Length: 298
Image (cartoon, rainbow, N blue to C red; front, side, top):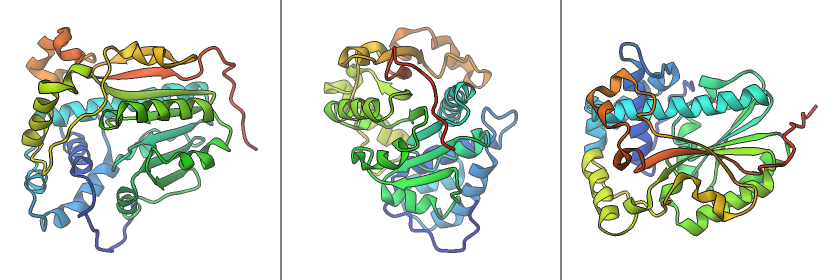
């Protein structure tokens, strides 16, 4: 945790980053937490007095800890699952690279570090500038302030020549489909020994009336200033396999799949297709059939 007393400018940072941060902090401080994250708790303590100066409805909700309980359960469950995907990959490739796309204020490196991985957080410059004031980089943890669509960020990572796990938690649905395809193909080319875990939205909740309804619902529930609309959706989790050779669908996960007690009565809907195919996480191998051995840099 960075102990700098420098004033933090939050004006240009997306509100969703604070929403996910505070959701994890609230759950971390609860009884029998889904995800214990002391660094996130410390970040929230530092941000509280700064958010008190903000006028937005979102800031008021965060300060008062009055978030929808579904969010304070869903977001930690999702973060824990992505941690597990990374940890499993690390068992096979202890010296791998982990790339956290659209990282926001997440502290995944500090939750999963095995002492050998090299970890990269990637987000837009304003977000990374803020994050660098809250947590400290080291020789194996790096932050890159760049658009995910400016593929130059891959240069410094690809030259490490290590197996790569790419995590895109809550990112791809905000990009147009063609840009998502370009990104996947570039990842496939640059990181031949890699896997991708990403959150996806069903196409029916992106287009037409349902898409508009979903955007309005997010704006109202989370008290955001702007409507957060989705641009990319799929018909099924294995759709990416049709994009090109080598993309192999491995697994689909929905946050109710864990059947966690803190989901409460919501668990009765866990097997309803109308719920578990709206938004979910999918796991892919990007170069299926290729030799999967890690090159270790000495």
